Image 1 (cartoon, rainbow, N blue to C red):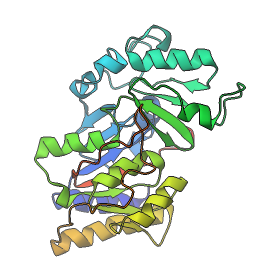
Image 2 (image 1 turned 180 degrees about the horizontal axis):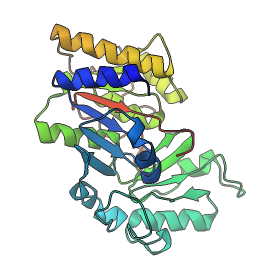
Image 3 (image 1 turned 180 degrees about the vertical axis):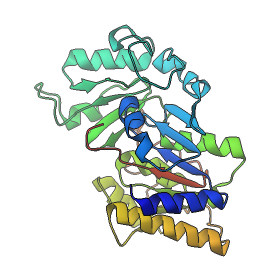
Length: 285
């Protein structure tokens, strides 16, 4: 993040725009880097499984996933008392975690409470490869790829669900939704927003989707400068009072989007949130 990013975010919030940060980062990574990020109205981490509203943890949101993730204590800081170790947790997410671990997948649940990560490429067990992962029984859970690794989480979680919760709270419409993103686990957010800006592309599926969406725009600059460029574009929209239109249909709706257990693309439901920014916290989350 840059000083200019922080300045632009402050101006947008002053203009009445809600800023929403949504990331796949684990709890410890996000909370460790949070002080360096611009202030936001809502923050979601673990792919939407945990929520902060005005800086305060919202345990009621995480409790909606209790059947999948089991109980998670209402504490913002990760630690041994936030939840039992994965080997003892209840819920089908952790049943799947134990199953995949026993099968030989390289799984990671450190400081995750509503999701876990699978390093598909880093798994060395014979027979466990991309094809095996795609054919796995995910028990009705959803998955998407973030920084080249697969995150598995409740089908009612995810970045689009996080955005929809903000909309529900504020009675917003999709006509005023803007998203910024760059990775595969952001596709559902891009499908739902009316305008999207991409400061970069880190997964081939995003580039494929970009070609199908007239309302998605790659910034001229990449990385931090691209983020500044996107925020400046949103500022111009706000200053001009321009509303953005409902997301147009695409020829192959949902192709490359995060998948549920049956392999079908998740439902495309038009929603909006003022500016939903999906951020890459670090290469090692």
